[in-house]
Length: 113
Image (cartoon, rainbow, N blue to C red):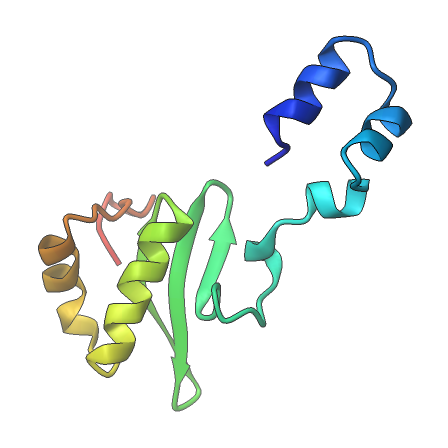
């Protein structure tokens, strides 16, 4: 997300180069999105597709899905709890209920993974 100060300066007619120098930044750092880094510990086992985040893990050469979430933060919280319980797929609903996190239904038959 681009900081509001930079957005305001650009709306007020400041040139892009001048704005970047004023705020001591560059385009690469402004546009960097950490959830694209699949090797980051923050997003390990989490994949972004469109506007949603999927938790998935490969166990014995088989990929298991543990739900679709609307925010990265929700996916990270659920993922951390799954790690604590040993990736038991039948505990996803219990974890989500306890934490008050809603999963996003899949497109297929509006069911949850």
